[in-house]
Image 1 (cartoon, rainbow, N blue to C red):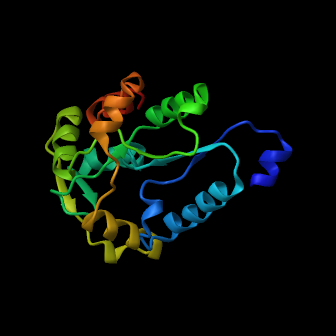
Image 2 (tube, rainbow, N blue to C red):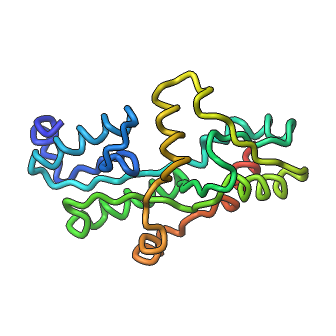
Length: 190
């Protein structure tokens, strides 16, 4: 990667990794990103690592099913906060880094827009969909993917670790989208 960046004379690399990839989670896709992060640090190239949390859009494909069933099923406890991010906020944050790369050079920043529990998400979904929605905690052991089992077990036990209050205070211009604000936009485009 650094050879290609040097050959292309890229002045500043922005790597979209994943939140907590630097915490030795044992989650395969987190660990693979940690390897890339280490190579980037070792390259000496100007760079910033952005660590997105869970994307709101992960439930976008399930909105019709949630509307029909009245169930929001996630493999974490329904009272456990789940730090989440809108793709819009990721794009705005990456643009902020690219606009002033010297302010972010060499930094690793985990980012999240909001931190609702599945129960809170269900209440917001219910209000937006005009029906009762109940959060249901699925068992992560029932997931067919070792990677997803590891991720949801980690999220249920530890959660992501973005410092949302400090992040939002330091970067108010992003206009951080709450889960409800994102959902309003997602429903209006369906």
